[in-house]
Image 1: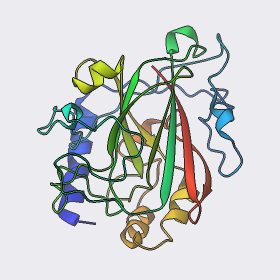
Image 2: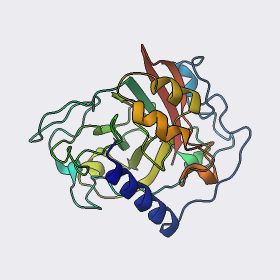
Image 3: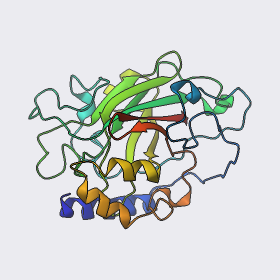
Image 4: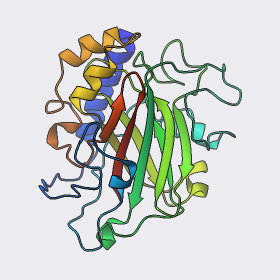
Length: 266
């Protein structure tokens, strides 16, 4: 991990998370227990991430800071307007970038976007999700030293009839001060997303501790082992005020790859 980048990211996240309004966390013991919001490692299927029935207890996914490296035009570079950003496999850079590929434990992420106002029973068809993350070293393409010429681990997709998008990526590294996570923004349409306008929700996905520990025992994640040992999700600057609606359900293994799922009410 590039320590100067990590420190900058940590401090920037802390500042924004204090400066930007964050939705109040409401503890929901019964919140979508079968909808992929409760971490069941290695014992769920993709079908278990279906949205709950209309009328079931539901609340919008908590709003979070996009952090200092969004790439959506709000802090410098805007990858959303680049040709090629609409894609499912985000492991490699595209367009006029340096053409690198992010290495790491294979990870497939499926987000199911549903309408919170309808009790989460209605999928948001034709919405769009922009997902971005740190690489195995904890660096963010377009911003971090050594990868400013890359734009990997960033991509946009339109939700299908079930409100789903699926990204192929790698397990993110853990940098100092932040629990392992992915960033995402939800837009009303693909046109809005690729115009970088009209974002309806910005949040983050967290990973269960046992999954992180397993992933970080593989080659290339040695610094993540040290960084994770100094953290807990309960004291993370973003997730400390509640993470029950952002903790992904994960199955798989570090050897075969992981599949993470999360229902995202907006």
